[in-house]
Length: 253
Image (cartoon, rainbow, N blue to C red; front, top):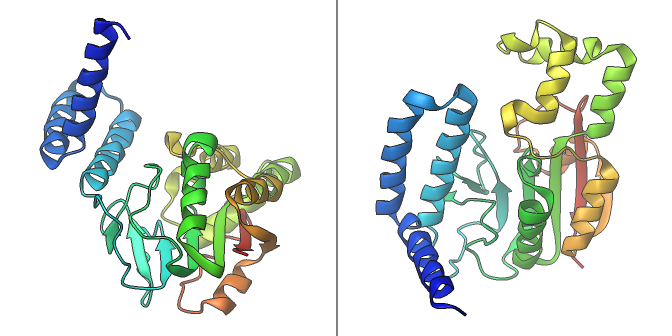
């Protein structure tokens, strides 16, 4: 290795260490907040803010595995805090975790159930989603079950071919009347389901999601309904989203 390459390697390691600390996070946050008002678009500002939350979660990640306070994991909980579960997200949750970091802070085989709703589509398949699924397999007990949901590529495409999404949009308006930007054209709602202002990395159909879970070591991947999830775990609030959402259950051998 040349001296120049060695220097670059050392600089990269120092940068990684610094920006993985709280001081590094606040330095980057201050810089981004100063700059984004000058040159960043609204979409970029949203993504930058989310990446800063991810950086903060990574900075607080324990160096050694920690025992979870619950045996059931609610991953990517958002504002939907469920009693009796360890509710995890990048912010405002029981445990702050960047799900794209490639590492989860718990020991092997500690969770008996995992529920993860509308999260996996936010992760790039090979560099983020598959490493997360492998980590979920690692922290799952024998015979543990994982329940996943995400926008369904097949249902979204069928809705467009049926009537360019008009029926799907009408159903959305009944459930989410506050989402005004989807009321202009049904096709814009289809766009939002696919990319959501750059937040969605890929959509899944059942075959692709089952392939990813099997690749990570899960077995018995089965397409289910929201009613199956709610019957198994009635403490979860219903989402009423099956018209565009794929639900799947898998388990650990």
